[in-house]
Amino acid sequence: MKNPKCILLILFAAWSFMPINGFAKTTTIAFLVYDKMNVLDYAGPREVLSQVGFGLEHDQSNDRVFTYTVGFPHASIKAIEGTTIVADYALGAEMPVPDIIVLPGARDEDVPLDPKILTWLKNHAAEKKQLMSVCTGAYFLAEAGLLNGRKATTHHLSFERFGALYPLIRLQKNVRYVDEGQILTTA
Image (cartoon, rainbow, N blue to C red; front, side, top):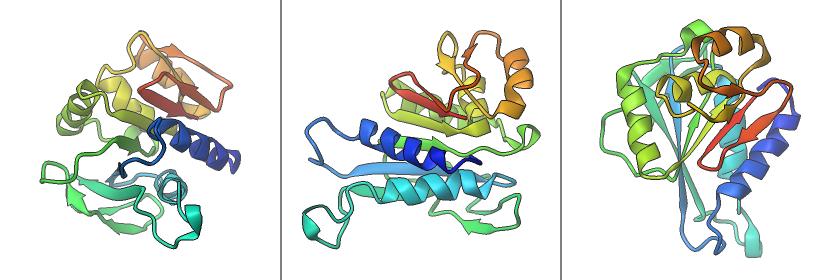
């Protein structure tokens, strides 16, 4: 996510994921964090999504959105820029059930397409949870088979490789995001 316009897109996406009846319940958002991920692809969306609904009715609390991190392969990870992030939960540990899962990107070769992550995503997709990828985070969804037959996008430098690896996905180029209902992919 290298373009500030993406922040507005993420805010739009956040509102589209909110319950139709307003903020009747807290929306729980999990962010996958992993070694060599792009910290901006994680931090930008988390900052924006954690603020959705904040300060409505002039209060200073936000009980409408709860965000947390899920670390893989362990709870402490090092992003590509050198930032160390200690996740709230390790993948596989007991954790709150997310309404939305956000998948940050990394360099193509650094996205860990581990079966544990893919199974976690498939299980949540089967429960009709919202899934959102940022840039090359789309590789997780593609490898899990969750984008087959759907429109999707990813980082523009990954179009060629992504398209070759996943021919069943209807790759959309020159768009900022693709909203396929349960799944949102961003460039």
